[in-house]
Image (tube, rainbow, N blue to C red; front, side):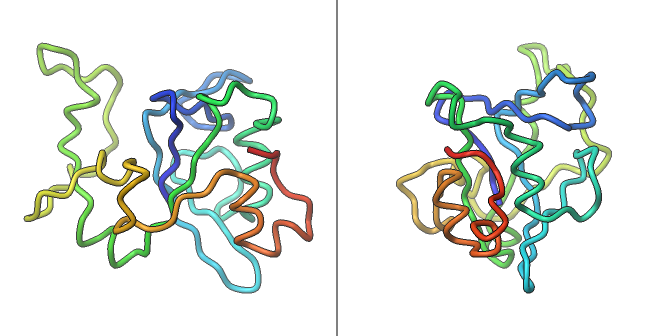
Length: 156
């Protein structure tokens, strides 16, 4: 699942890169959602339990998101894993300054470069359905019935 916003950066709480109660602003963030009888999130950058029920993850990562300015509210794109593996690429250029130096330490894993022309920006293009369905937080709660039953997450 890709997480982004219309404003170019989505604030997220409980991220390892954050300090205390300060959010981290990601240009985009990618997590794994596994759905069994309940949906669980696997977020390598999150401070919470691993995996964490999706409704809890939304609640702590996006507190009171329904009250945020519209451009900051999270947008979620559910992308099937086979499509992600086949299409997603990132050379991390968006993480560098004009001289090619990282603005923050990069993740410890190698860059993800596919043989096609796919790019992380393509996944954020709301008009391109080939990357999966796009949801706001309220729509995501409807997509996963266990979220609605537990009252998880703020609106969106």
